Amino acid sequence: MLDSKEIISLASRYNMMEKDPHSDDEIRSILSLKNVAVVGMSKNEEKAANYVPKYLLENGYNIVPVNPTADSILERKCYPSLQEVPEQIDIVDVFRPSDQVLPVIQEAIKKKPKVIWLQEGIHNEEAENLAKSAGIKVVFNRCMLAEHQRLF
Image 1 (cartoon, rainbow, N blue to C red):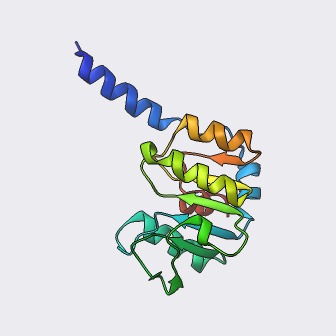
Image 2 (image 1 turned 90 degrees about the vertical axis):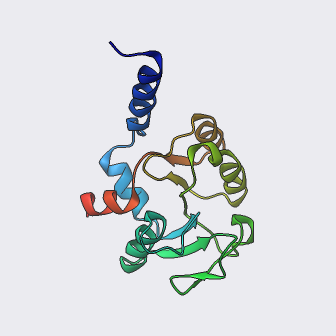
């Protein structure tokens, strides 16, 4: 018999398995967009927040790192916030914990991207609904690298 802590743990893991309802064709269409700001991009080559954007860069994407602790990552100028990114962004790719996503989404909405992509393991219904109400598509709990490899 499971105790209440084990039930809550299992329930939270189940919720993390949830993902957006986009079809493969919709994901292919989203992945055809090439200007990607990566919020929370890491200098550490062993972290997904570094090797995923590196893979995207190697596959024809324009990657714009957003990290207030770095001047450059992968030889690309790094911006401390989305608001300081001078170019138009198609996709805001987010590598931040679910409970830190809302302020990122609020900032992203001001940049008017076509898509906000919350990486694998990231899901924040309040933030996602805010983006959707601003007319922005939201992908959540999916990895851009994995989806690109799966579909192309």
